[in-house]
Length: 344
Image (cartoon, rainbow, N blue to C red):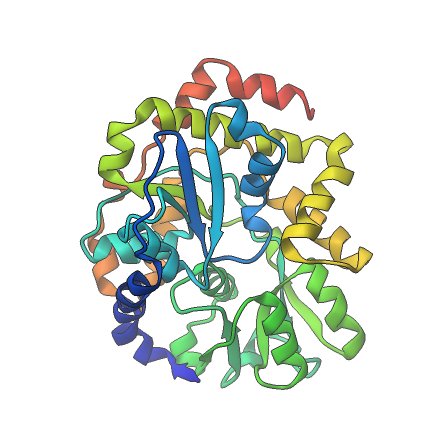
């Protein structure tokens, strides 16, 4: 199923909140939460969640008294659904998902995000030689308004492409592995694909039109976000969450930990080919940073891009979403400076 670009404007809010209502029936099973339990839902089945995986599997959250777990769901909309159903404590979500949710009246606070690049290729068919050749083509995404969709929109914006004017259609396909397969079967014409998966497409004649990792525009990937009242009432707890996340990021950025980090990636992403695992690690290292404070310039960029299809997003007050105090505390105390010394 694919959508003409203009029709997305009418469907985005329904896609986010309609999915939330449906998902409630699947996730409202009423499990009680212990005080230090920290369940986080996420929709992106890719390396952007790796700092959380490493933090959990290598004991950084346990070190700070947190029993953390990641709950993978099909899309960013469904991750929000689990939060609204009180089945998780936070979401690991793209800014587009957060802005769409807040524009619908939900009060969220975002406290940290360790991803500041889009280390992916815009993979196209061999006959596509320039951005102009994308006119009338079909692009694949995982969900409307989610992280992969947002990355695609940012890359197109960087190329000076207005999807409306170019007649580009969006087809909901699935995660990046499914997108790669859809390109092979000619179900879509182009898509944003990880470096590792790109290696599987090159031998079949596909090419990279843009390496998005080289784009200098402000960008921030998924962030830890929770209901505003939850963050306000548990400041000390969320400071420990950010500490654990920072230590996981520093572990990823330490060269000596490559073998261990690749094992975490391979297990969670179910990778077996060495070249794909290596590509996945390269993605992770290129996009991961200890500069984790929520980036208002990146939020503004997302606001501008998503406003093309959802004007309500322009009314969102970013100062009511962003809380950089936790990361700033770690900066002022020297905590992050000490972590940076370990990989420089």
